[in-house]
Image (cartoon, rainbow, N blue to C red; front, side):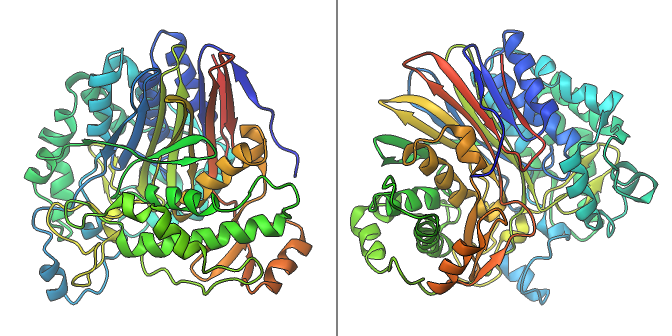
Amino acid sequence: MVPGRSLAVGDRGMAAASHPAVALAAVAMLRSGGNAVDAAIAAIALQGVIDPHMTGVGGDCFAIYAPASGKPVAVNGSGRAPQKAELGWFQQQGLTSIPDDSPHAVTVPGAVDAWCRLSADHGSKSLDEVLAPAIRAAETGFVVTPRAALDWARYANRLERHQAGIPVYLPGGAAPAVGARLSHPALGATLRRIAREGRSAFYEGAVAEEIVATLKAMGGLMQLEDLAGARPDYVTPISTDYRGHEIWQCPPNGQGVAALFIARFLAGFDMADPSLSEADRIHLLAEATKAAYRQRDALVADPAFHPLDVDALLSERTVAALRGRISRERASEPTVFDMPVHRDTAYVAVADRDGNMVSLINSLFFAFGSGIYAPRSGVLLQNRGAGFSLVEGHPNAIAPRKRPFHTIIPGLLSKDGKPTMVFGVMGGQYQATGHIQILSGVLDRGLDVQQSSDVPRSFAFDGVLTLEPTIPAAVADDLTGRGHRVVWADEPLGGCQVVHLDRSRGVMFGASDHRKDGIALAV
């Protein structure tokens, strides 16, 4: 294990986020008497201002709210394709896929609606107070942190085709350096309207009209009715047992079921066995990931169009049959992924003084989403629609008002019916694997949540086994000998944020990944 960060410890509230100002905003909300929902929304709204390549009001949101007593509830705030998005129309245009920077990649942004619904139903403060940190940052300015600057520069080209966002996001024509100070008054004004008027400020009126006009000018299919009719859904979270705990995920159209499948797969092995080598653990996780992702890619889509029997998929009969096909000594056949690579996300974990917990994730999909920007309202639009298939009969084929397959997944762990941990691992495709890699470190190896976050990571995906360079070369050689095609990661795998509540002692522990700029803070 490599040196890492100290574990955050407290007993009156905790927040973890990938940006220090975001974690501080959540803790400030808790200190002022807000609950976990207030803190999570305040945090993610701020992150959309200061980490605009990762998330924003033009993106989507999923959340699991776990009250201290009672069952967890999940909110699906992912947007839908426009009503006019018929598969045949795209085929008539000669398209075989949806370009990730085109107006057709823009689905209805669902994040704002999800925030408003959560706030109204489970928050304790007004939207005006909850959105104040984001409004202040947009109007008075913020400084760019190191990891944000790195990603900003790496993906600046995603803004260049459409030009409108350049003055705001690339002042002077270049990505801002570490410590650069930026502001975004147009976005601040939109956030003020949302704080005052709620969802209608975004999905109706001037903001909606500009979004639709911007997309129509590029040949897009979005109509005002698509935005006005947007609604988040409360959905029943899905779960499975692992080492005497219950792991909870949002149901499809997200990939949370793949995380549960990996857990079910690994439950057939003694992952707590101290004699397992690092190569053994990486190999078993890789084989579990490949088995889970084969099922995921074939089955997960909008359940309103392509229902999935989650219980059958996670049954011991199904999992054991696939588990029995693997060898501890030889890698199974690789699988090839045929959809766009899913990249950028922002995640927040919060627990309040009463033991209520929130796991919330928000994303634009690619860095800076589609790159399409509505300048008067300051809205940068996501490109989730690029994840749709244009193949007839594919479970994820585009259709009117259909939700695309999603990689962003908030996680929850409970014990004896009580929530004990909220966690997320940003990083697109890696997220399902990352969830179980973190949980296995805690539940199988006895690591605390920060230690488990610090452990070097691996990911078997799209025919290769990617290893972080902190993994010893001898381990890589061992895995190559088992038949894995090993490559070294050129950037960190994922970004983990965790809040863990030890209810027996009334103590909270927080972890924030050293791979990001963030921090875990106690009240």
